[in-house]
Image (cartoon, rainbow, N blue to C red; front, side, top):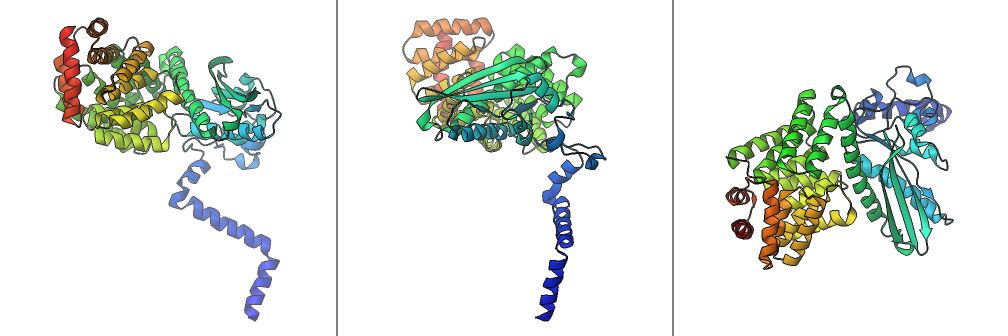
Length: 478
């Protein structure tokens, strides 16, 4: 007992020294354990995911931390991927409860954006330094070293609360995108997650379009792998025809040549290699599918947990005739980044092909509800129309198809699904007109090519047969 008392007395007298030793033990244990890999990356000045930048200067220990001095010593502009800062939302209500709501929304948007591996998102401890201020956005861009700033506000309008947001390019101060959401005040806290999901989903899509346009303006020697892939994705998703698919494939191939270990470029190549099969451009579906899956496997070997890689590979696997595998990839992608509209669209298409059109409608309707103005929304309506056709919900199929051609008028497949819906409803003359529009876009496309493709990809033969019967009818009458 006496020895224990002596030990306790010694610990009390040397508490400061012991605490320092204990801290060192903990630090070494974290840094040099497998779980400390990310910490080691930070300490070596490398970025690991979407974390706040760390100074790699060996004399940094003598300097104030970034959170203390970032306004006085602005970091360099991040150029290897699109960078964004989310400023604290302004509470324009006298209700202090809304202050917590505004701060919580800001933090949730930062977290949501951080799920996208293609973005660099500034951490909250830097952006909240601007709380209560009205800084010039160009100054914010220089101080934080970011390309884009998102700012927003909440304000009461009668019995409703209006949330407004705007995305601004810091170089020029140009507004890239803006949106507003109105919700009843009484419900706002119950549906905060839905509001945030809507904003993040729309923001990610529009940020991708902005980056594509920015890359298109850049000199060829300044284009990096990620910028080329962004261009390719937007080109395919916003103007989906065979010419643009080929152009997008060239961009992705160039990205892979610039940076051979960049998994996203290989995954995007797998997607773009799979799409021509749906346009009747394949002379051997089995051989082309094997090529697609080879690219899928290469991408996944390089980055098996990257949500963007999983997303592209899931879509590619769908058209390569591996719908069950595709659903698995896409579910894994959504578990990591649930705010990707394009991934959820791909997921809806995979569920359709996997014989689950009802589940497909649920996934696709969620995209449309969360982001009705998404630049890729035409794809969502297209796959939704096919889901409804598979379920024999003909009026809903027609409406979804009309929404598809409204948003994507150069997408030949949209006119095909609209014609099939109209024909099934007995409106043969209108169906014939839609097929004529399709043939102006794709004059060499035949029913036989499509029939073989559907048999190749649909897991349930009866589902392929039902859809092929509808399409054969409209092709014969066109």
